[in-house]
Image (cartoon, rainbow, N blue to C red; front, side, top):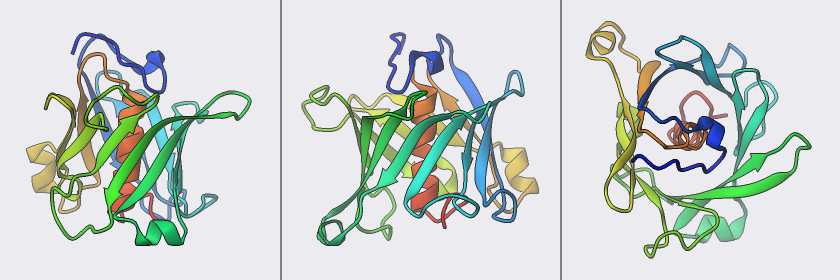
Length: 205
């Protein structure tokens, strides 16, 4: 993937492959959430606070390293959603004036009982894909072994763990994400924040 694919912002599209480290925080620290650092510079790139301090249930905010909000992710609710085959999350770009512009929708099947359960993401504006979606999750996020792939099956981002770290730590509080060239890193971590919430990890209430 050599072409830039800005979904949130072209500022977060790199011409080269990027490896980012994720460290989850316990709920007693800032209400949970996680911090993302660039493994080559050790600079904090993104933060997602858990909702244990000042968040709302079913709502997440991705912030940059300076704590400026970039992306608001909100889960749709209500009776219609409860009866639907899918739960929907919507991602909104946040500008400096606080205005919201929808940039993607994530659809999660109404059951977390099945591995590889077909979580799919469509980006705005629509009609980028004849399949009705642009990306899907393959693998199982709680195992920290999953990928975001496009409609052609190309991996655009991959979640994994260092084997040495995995041996030392029983929990999966530290993992890494490899983002392919041109892919919007802010979008990738917006999706990862939602997966973290769905599976009841650090961002969940």
